[in-house]
Length: 511
Ligand code: C2E
Ligand code: CA
Ligand code: CA
Image (cartoon, rainbow, N blue to C red; front, side):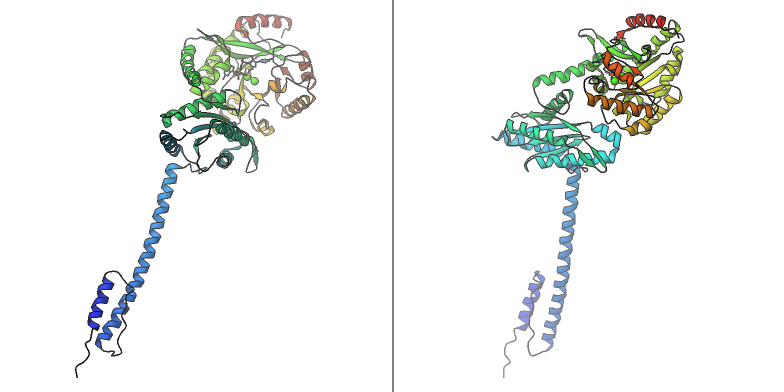
């Protein structure tokens, strides 16, 4: 009897082909014969099983590796395009987004607007409370900004305390309303760790025009921001072409100033500082002026800012120090011999941090034979706050040598009692803003009284600035303030005028 045709070998061959082509799920059922061929079928099935398991494993590993690669890629992209502190876009991504928005504008969409923000007072926060608090503040500012824009807008941090926004699909009014909302929102105090601090933002707005490139758009927004900064603190300015001219004129002014310092076009005016109990002039403050060849006599407000921005302030301050010390030497060798008298000179914090600053001052004094006790160096409060070792050691060196240090404009920044105790100080100059309402506003009177009591408690001397009325002077004296300075006793005068005044005062009050 003929055996039925056995197609198991054909099926087996098909199975092997299927498995080889990647279908690892293919199987074959063995026959009831359970012969050698079935044994091979069972063996192939087992191998297939093994293969399927291996394949699954491999696939899982490939998936895992792919996810890891994607994450690494994203992280690289984040590093290249985002600010690590705030998670906001960085300058590169901002540039891309502006270019993209400009490309849309070329195809008919409304051109974007760029807002550039710079925080006012951030440096004081950093200097006063340290960088970790500064960082927390920046993170919070970033969060607030992101909250105030739409998904389609971009918020970027350009570095330091500078932020930028690209606003798309919005009319001018909408953009300006947004800028105003941002300005107000950023003024709210920020809780950074244990510190509550606040800053404000100067905002420059530039509306793009078709065909403009990202770089000029950013530059113009920056120019507008600069105008905002120079105007009222914490304001919004829209870019206008004339602003570009102003920025340019600052550059030109810096060039002129460089020449002016070298060519002795600067002058020093002197303003008396008076002992409130005796009425004697016990010193003068040296205040720089610039006899500009075209613009006439310029006040420091018109050029000290430029000098600080360009680093020229160091040369400027040295020039003023040399001139004032030489002047004092001349007075001391004549009618001021033996009199109690001090020369106050302003120094920029930038200068204080330059290496060998204290030696330079002492060399200058030695050269003119002026004792260190005759000099008071005035430094603005916010800048004195720096806790960097350079500043502190320079202050210590000056004081060890016998030079007095005054904190200037006290009451305008983060006037903290802690600083008075910790810093190396001798004199506190109380800002004019705290003196102005002294004779009219009871609240101001109480504030001034409190400050004077604190200054006294730390064993420091107080000089009230901007005293304009006899009533203010009398109240200050009654509150225990020792010295005053202001228009009541005289405007800042050129050296000859001040000499004449001092001759009279010295004759009336012999040492
Ligand atoms: P400051 O150190 O607070 O100087 C006092 C300013 O108040 C002077 O302005 C002075 O003219 C003005 N002033 C004095 N008494 C009165 C008053 O009774 N009423 C009013 N309304 N003002 C009064 P000035 O000379 O324009 O100087 C402005 C600022 O420029 C100074 O403020 C100081 O911060 C800076 N500065 C002046 N000279 C130098 C310098 O040589 N180097 C540096 N780095 N800064 C300087
Ligand atoms: Ca001063
Ligand atoms: Ca002052």
